[in-house]
Length: 205
Ligand code: GRF
Image 1 (cartoon, helix red, strand yellow):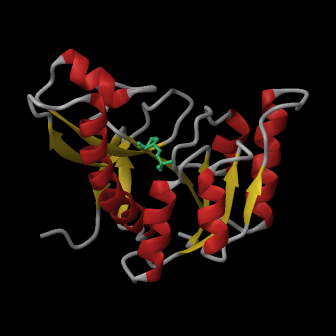
Image 2 (tube, helix red, strand yellow):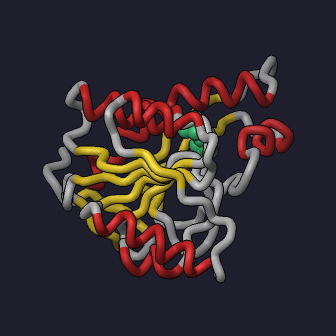
Image 3 (cartoon, helix red, strand yellow):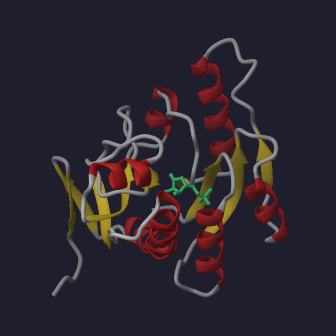
């Protein structure tokens, strides 16, 4: 797969930072060629610029339709010959035009063990439900929210003493480890989809 990555963000950008760090220290053999935020003041834009990566704001507001916005995203990404799109705290649904332009080439990270607790505030949802184990999922993006084929997951225990904040912080540590690993796996081509199942086809002993 083409190893040129585009990252879409809406805010803090700590997962973006984890991807940047992994490309720098050799854990991820890829280049982040553009970072696009739908929010002008996203801190992640600054992180990208500090790393010497092109960073732009493309607001989702003011377009004649949601599809027009999606087509603008496709244009920015294809102009830069992006092969894989990584969502990293991008708070919008990805529309049909993006999905058609990047088939099985848009991934997302979510702070729960999907299919449990999709959507916003996944860590609080898990805490309030009372699960003893939650975690992180990296999955392909489809038209349904947080429901695409799962690439990798990692578990994080819920402690009796946890608040939503302490749990989110422990999950975030795992997110930062897992996202670069998952992206490397997808770029390595040694996999196929068997229905919804992401199956490794390489040398797995
Ligand atoms: C992360 O918890 C990610 O799993 C979720 O949104 C949050 C983004 O955080 N999709 P950051 O912007 O990467 O710091």
